[in-house]
Figure 1 (cartoon, rainbow, N blue to C red):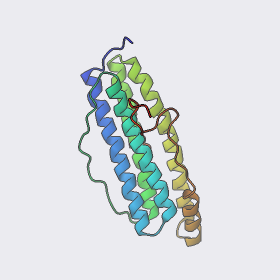
Figure 2 (cartoon, rainbow, N blue to C red):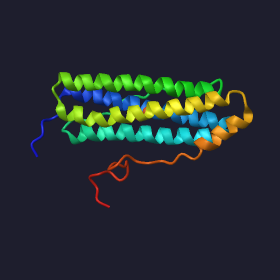
Figure 3 (cartoon, rainbow, N blue to C red):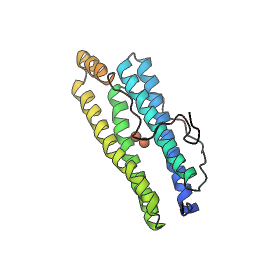
Figure 4 (cartoon, protein in one colour):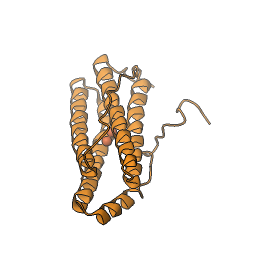
Length: 183
Ligand SMILES: [Fe+2]
Ligand SMILES: [Fe+2]
């Protein structure tokens, strides 16, 4: 298979984006335990799945780097916030965070264009689509929690609804086992 090795100018920003994805996982895991501490178990569950998805995003990107002749490197992850004033504030934070990530993905697509790296550009299309979905779902949950407001029963109903979320790996990609090992 004649592939062109990933350039260093492409390798680094991909590793940095993987780091942001891992930070996202930390952030949502932190939110999950915040919700557990205030006994909102459905919200805690939703955030735990969200953290899992972000780990998938991290490894999918690093696997691409490693599989394209590059070098996948794990960078330091900053500590996320650990408390929020209310569920609404936490979901507002998710909404804002996902918009920031969308901007980062677009910037990364820009690097791929500058580097004339069509393969990476094509690879990043998955992340662009994923961000559209992430923005939609964060919008949806934010609106649900906003609508509940201070109404305890409505908040409990929202908590129950988010507790119904199921985890799905992206088509053709799971983080276990490592793809190089046949099981
Ligand atoms: Fe992500
Ligand atoms: Fe995300």
